[in-house]
Length: 74
Image 1 (cartoon, helix red, strand yellow):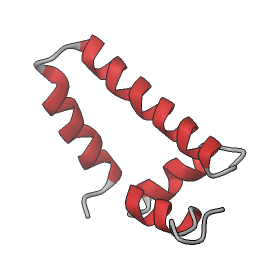
Image 2 (tube, rainbow, N blue to C red):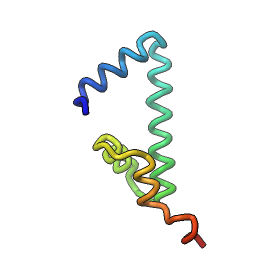
Image 3 (cartoon, rainbow, N blue to C red):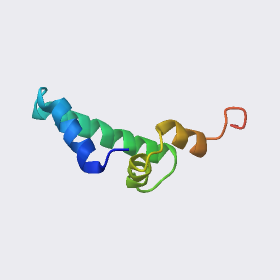
Image 4 (cartoon, one colour):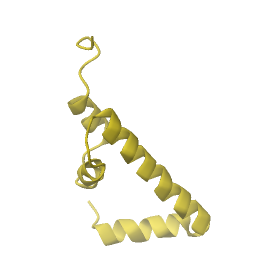
């Protein structure tokens, strides 16, 4: 897995042609998604979601862990 600086540089290269507004929109979208996930999972601090994703977990990993299987929902 590339280090954080390499990932940041790669993202900057990807978005460079789209401009600063695209970068702001991308960051805002991810912040909103983390907040929404935290609310859905009853997690007080959305940084918990971000930290786990940065550690290599996938959104599916989190969903499978934090939401009951559809057969268990009441």
